[in-house]
Length: 362
Image (cartoon, rainbow, N blue to C red; front, side):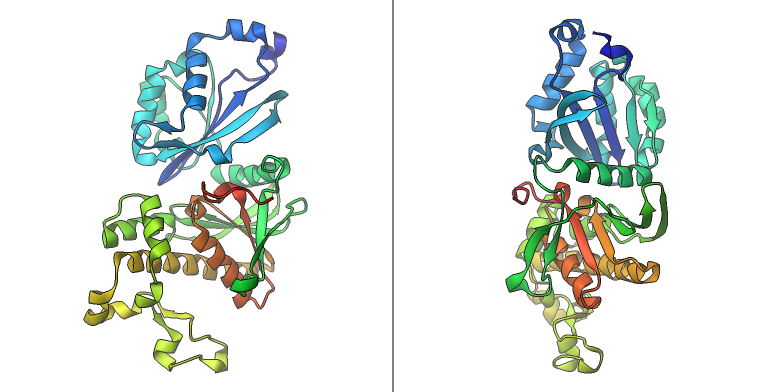
């Protein structure tokens, strides 16, 4: 009973309000005593029931059941961690829901990060009566990365890499421990891209970034193919052939550019074939989606590799919602890092960015 005086009041939420997606983390306590249950107000019970019994909320909210972390101990309490996401354009609807469900009566603090924690702060206060505890998104990124790796993925490793990424037939997924992760280059691919050089959990710098990120991929795909969602864009890209859109080295040289070790299959000019009307008339929307995905991924990989060389760091961790359900880009990044560095750079990824249709590595 006295626990309530030592620990923050439920419900516990964390929000990352990004440029494209809002990511919501909810801690569901599983060790509630009979006395606590009796004292809980009905609105708190209804929130818990609503969040944990549904996998979809409204038209766009989704709980990624496959990402749920079970039987965690946080702040002395045992429970499960749920991961929910919805488009940032629906933020006002979420704030309205907070008002309708009387969140402000629960005396809880909403911890929030991302640009939207600042952009929507006044709306939370005036519409829902909620105060945000704002936290820096890059601090949260590093702390969150280290935390999720330390607890693992329900008994499985969180971090992984691809062994032999330059050899498709022998490319194998392997676990990687971030127990001693420093220094590392952290490449956060969201709407745009931020690249951090991390020397300890408290010592890091933002090296650079690029405005060409996941938002660019989706925005261009919407324009080029008429798709409307990230899932739809990736589904198209998975079926397309980017070489019908991109001009390769062999299209210019007739083969490899041997003097500088450029393979004929390397992209020489992204979308380079699209200056030809004949080529434009022969390509599919799937080809365009694939070429857009390859363009954004290659650009990110190229910048990350240059940063790693400049900072003298050989471990590159790729994170961000761009990599969600996007195995094409993870494999491409692993290949690019390995091939262009002659095996000197290792590309690392997290299970919490992988497809809902794949299980964590055994």
